[in-house]
Image (tube, rainbow, N blue to C red):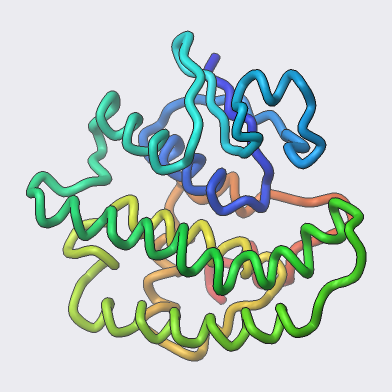
Length: 221
């Protein structure tokens, strides 16, 4: 059995989970308190980060590397275009969300409102939260601009770029920190992603002491 060491509200883990589910690869999910840096976990990934995946005798780490490995070894259904320009655009947007969006939004909001509580690191810093809530407006507008020109974020087919963006936004939606009324394009796009069978396990996630927002699991939101 394949095994994924993960944290439910990690966007990087969610990206891998969406890819696995879309490709119908069965996996056992193992919650990993990676911040405790246990010796067993550090042996699996000396970088001390999730996700980490055990698959066919291999230990895989780093979400983008895992997803592209899955794409190459299980190519159906495809999550990357065939042409170099299309693959470039998917990778560019994956980096946009995993780097820029993560630094400016995810870590500012989730880090303060969720992970400080879970890791018992004190109270949220309101300046960071306000900064994240301000920055997300720019990112939603950018997504809306992309979707004005394309059916999906990177082009005419759903790709890993869509799963990467949805992974980050779904974490924020869990705590009701996405203004879906800001862009009808983005709201419609997220509704399409959210309705996919691959998304079901994410919508069932629950964190102890932190129930999801009422609209989180609703397909018609």
